[in-house]
Image (cartoon, rainbow, N blue to C red; front, top):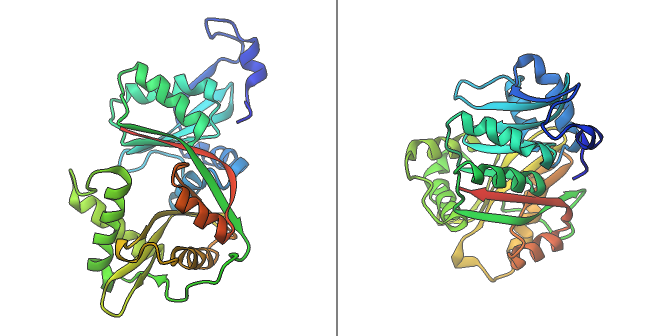
Amino acid sequence: MLSRVAPWLASRSKDGTGPDAVTVRVLSSADTRALRALAMEDAVANVFILAHLDSTGSAAPTSGGASVYGVFDGDTLVGACWAGANLVPVQLDPELASRVAAAAHRAGRRYASIFGPAESVLALHACLEQLGHFAHEVRADQPLLAIEGPPAVQVNPQLGFGELADFDRILPACAAMFEEEVGYSPFLGSEDFYSRRVAGLIRQGHSLVHIDAGGTVMFKAELGAVTAEATQVQGVWMNPEFRGQGLSAGYMAGVVALAQRFAPVTSLYVNEYNARARATYERVGFQRRGTFATVLY
């Protein structure tokens, strides 16, 4: 990541003071345009916050208590970080992570994860660790992949959009994927919250699934974030009974074809060590656009 404020950082005094001292504050609706402009510097990497702005129309805190910390050099917004159940940095220079981490710590919240561009995520994690927030797992190298244009393999036409009538089949598949990925049930703490999340994705037309004639979910994925510029695919899951049969590439090609009804660029991020998944994505035509990291608490 190129530093957006490096010249100023290099010249400021050791005690952090200067004519245009960096400040951090919670953004308000008046900051919406500046936050959108900041995020649009990389519309693929920042699709999460851009989707939020499209949905709510505002950078102001949500009714659920989530907010966005803005980092200012004078009056100029030079970085930001979503702070809800998770922390998501937005064009945040790693050298400014300590200021955001301090603000997040003072809020007294527990965060489930940090995810986003690797340098910013890992810098936030290092600062939060010094403040007593210890990670359960750190996934430091997650290639950010994207495809624009048709997939390189034939689409599996059996993949379609999930329907609420199939909710009772889709929810267990989503829960199985979640438990495989993070190591614990998504129903711990609040079963209703996860169920509402899955139902919401179905209602939005962001649930992609193939259910065979017998009612078995063979494959599913979700569009976790959607804007006019890009989508981000999450929750990719193949039923274990059908793994190893060469079906994944056709399903992922179907994901791309359906996602491109919303936006020209389809993206996702994957663990570096997941060689099988990475090979499938490469076969479909995904190319690396950067590196993400995820810290799980």
